[in-house]
Length: 82
Image (cartoon, rainbow, N blue to C red; front, side, top):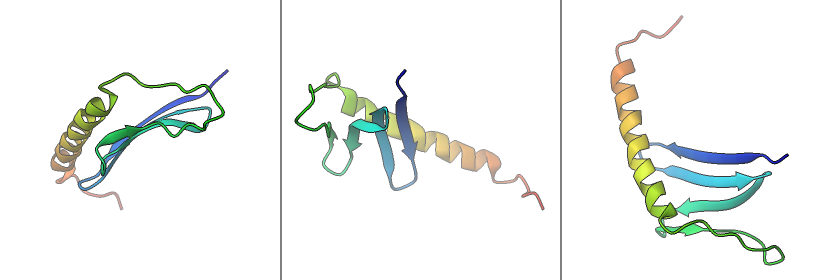
């Protein structure tokens, strides 16, 4: 069995999108340099993600930030538990 993990998270100023398999990072979005990175070692058969994966990651960041804004707005008047 394999463990496949997809990470998509954001804040107001930062974000992360990454794909992992069995604890090894296979792909991540480098939002600073505006590209996808496949940090696979040279001794394995290289696998690539489809073209458009980075563009999808950028779009998902916009959705994440919108959801974050909506959650903050919806929860602002809820009193904290004591």
